[in-house]
Image: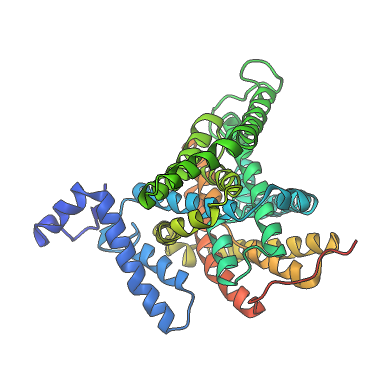
Length: 424
């Protein structure tokens, strides 16, 4: 539940605290969006990205500043809705043929960059005095791209639907799949990663074996994709057309939201796939319908509102003390996120024959961290693997990279779609 910092009591505001405690959902949305609007207006007047205002709103209502403290779990769930709706919207504009066309560069690029960033981050973690297990979690958290920031950046730059956007989104999907496997493996490998006396699972394919867990995860993901491509590609457009034939616009909108959220929820609950990936496939299948354009239009208002709450929730996690407690470590973390990740992505895309402009756009778009980073930290924290200062470093890196990313795009001047295709 929401609380107040020391020095603020219920007697100071007899009515407000009661409403805040009794209605955390309404309070979180009202106060979060209200402050986000105020600070976003200020950011706009100062010619800063609106995201800066959203993040500042989160810091103000977070647990590390005086006054009102919002329920972080509630804010996180609301932010997850934004991620679902964003990925659903991307799926509506993304075809399977687009993903297949860029499969080589995104598979090699995503997996290769995860390996490079994780190894470099592991070396940095050892310098900080952390264990190998902590270093591996640290590296994985820094290697993955934020869905919300990537899509928001591409949309603001007018690049959605372009060649760089197709590659960047495909790259992000491969990273998400890798992170799904990482989340599955963290609990059984907790002992090896440094979680006290947690037992190690056997390496084989017997009951509870590591090989069995990996094979099960692969089977679940493959089954989900097969169901969506075989059954979903017929059922989802049919449901949408039936809702449209009723002549009730309200019913059509409800069908769109029910399908987006329903598929995302069931994909996570039954198949262990992330909400974001499930929503993406729901949108991609719905794109086969002639009503996909209307579906996109109906989702936009909710998508934008909940995307704002995502940035507010990130701001709530930020502990300013990390800036003066570990300044060198923070600079090194940012160097990996913004510098190393950009360089690796740029060199990979260029190695596959794409133009310099395309490579720069993709490299900058992928130079931040977000949702999966926090999921990895949460999972590792439950297992007693990661120290608190490492969590604060990752959150600080996420916040600063989210602020820097739009500025880098502005510096590149990306306002039009690059035309060049890969050589040969």
